[in-house]
Picture 1 (cartoon, rainbow, N blue to C red):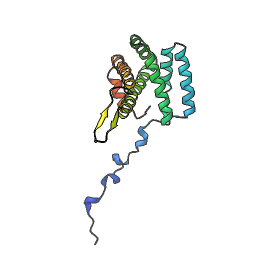
Picture 2 (picture 1 turned 60 degrees about the vertical axis):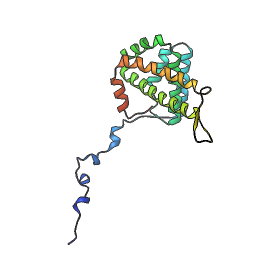
Picture 3 (picture 1 turned 120 degrees about the vertical axis):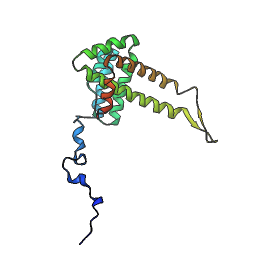
Picture 4 (picture 1 turned 90 degrees about the vertical axis):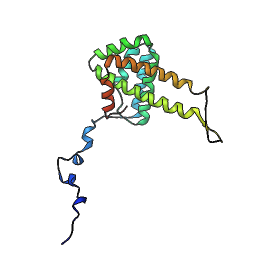
Length: 186
């Protein structure tokens, strides 16, 4: 008679209601694929609105057409467009614009997308500024440059933090939770 070590049997594989047998792909919503060329043409249209003085329309258009199904290059192009829009809007206009977007149909979703872009922009500027300001020395220590490449990232971070503050005032902390739990990335 063969001896069977009962401790090595994976009982979760035998239970159909087990989380091990749950298809995780059903949690991710289906997104339409978008090519980089489509994202570039959309960015051109949005920048045209921005040059025409319609910064609110440009922001609304960028948030409503987030390219969830694009590759990383396409997502970077759209991120740069959104950050350009955010930097072009004066601080005194932030709250009224966010209030109008929030009160429009689909406003909560649009502000959640904006929060995603703010967080993505914060992570982009933070990693790029830390890597370019440190230079390794022959002694094994790193020297942090006080002048030069670091000033631009600080200005972008300041703008993003201002937008984050105003966005939490309008949409509430629930927006942060929704962004952190959403599986779609911008």
